[in-house]
Length: 111
Length: 309
Image (tube, rainbow over all chains, first blue to last red; front, side, top):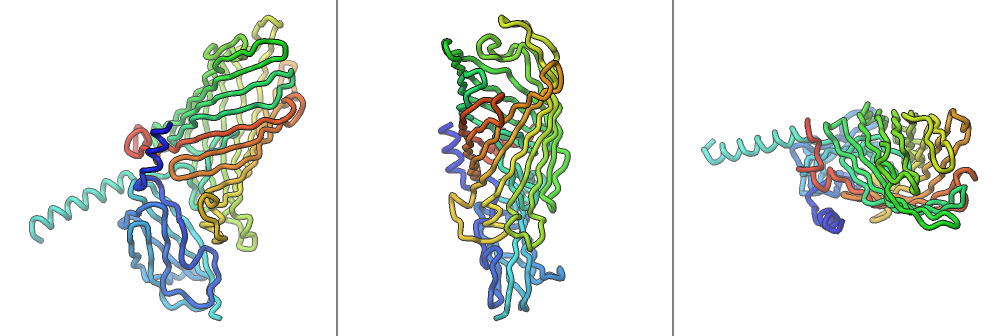
């Protein structure tokens, strides 16, 4: 059991990726529109099989479609956002090939 | 394109193709929802996982005896949607006025098939078939059965992430549950205390969970950090209802409130055990469990299905 614990604790490049935190924060309400959405995950990502789509209330895509990666970070630029609610749908594959996905939203008030 | 670059491109393409071919669904996920491995009730998903160990101090039984158990179980996927399970436990039983008895309970094996996983609605279900084998434990003293029991099972789970925005604080809730029916292959055993009848039982369980991981990472960033952003408070309830052979309606069961912390490679759970009636026992007990996610610990060996992608 000790060996298994050690293997688990030291195997940082394994396992499915959870979202650790995001900017803007999950479920947040912002006065000014962000220019980029950043998401940090608990594992390193495989860029070729990971991505993100950000849509407005009508379902129209508002990100630039060109996510950037840096190990555990995935970020994507945004078009100029008017006030409204936006939904972030991410899907990632960690380097051990486990797939996970998730959604969260944020609001822009413009005030 | 010169030759080294061509070679590098070919290698990269091959690596990506291999990765795509081996993309694996992680254990216990349905869309945004991560279902932890519940302790009292069965999980609604096939997996490569192992509980090593579950330590249980049971409430005092109706006959006044006290029992402690050391349990073990493992699930191994044969294909991505089909797994094999095995479990057993070592028991320590102390009846009033008698010497303590120790021994293994009966070995239980099973097979399970994942019926569906619905990501948008965070729903999943599996069908299984369990066998508790006769004479695989200590029959005299430890109470292991001298008869085999066959039990078809149905396990299900549903996350509440698809609730409307107005109910946002309820979205971290999830419910899992199971139903099973016992068919003992022998109706009567003869013991020193006389004949013992073995009824058909209807078994049901439910686990109500509130995932702080889901709250923090899918609903609202409320500032939870480790270890709190991986905790799942829950209440599990399981009952067994005999249906015939003179024991109709003599239901037994427990209510088990507790907490599970689920990390990347293992989870730790603890629950109190409260009997639902005097027939089940009195007082309260407790358990702790250490549970390993083999698919994450050993993704390229014992943690992957034996067959299929």
